[in-house]
Length: 212
Image (tube, rainbow, N blue to C red):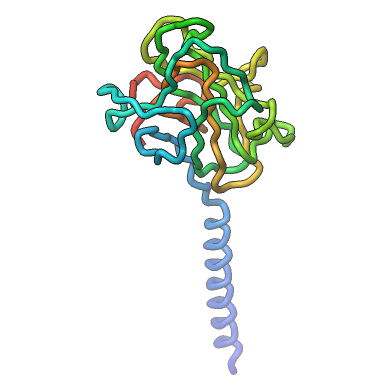
């Protein structure tokens, strides 16, 4: 092999190697797709997801349906009490802060009930320090406290007495988690639950229906 030919082969090999390294580097630097907004319409839930909640018609709701609890004026208790609730699963991404919002319909007050409160829990949820929180069946939960005025309202799910940052929800692993929404007052209803990692992280939706 001549020196000239050997030099040509070396140059070609170096170019190929450099191109491969550049391709790998560009793939490694490619940012991950941003986490999606998680939107749940209660009209799409099976009846098996409801415990002492009923399906009610409302033309303003997605699919023309919402879920709510009859109002007898009795008092309800927060978790871990097993009062009326709705359970369903959603897919989430780990290491991402989510803000929880519920599109609540405040009902007519009666007896002990102002018909304006829900409690929310999640499986596999952690706080910013990676400690387990909000687990269904425990006394750790977020509260969606609606206004006293009857009607529809996007309501934030918050830690009682905490800072806004305390209400952000993180998850230990990506994948499917269980959401537990429990009535805090009889007569309350809702038609959407939103877990927002970006678009509604600080402010609630301005539209009545968030599109999937």
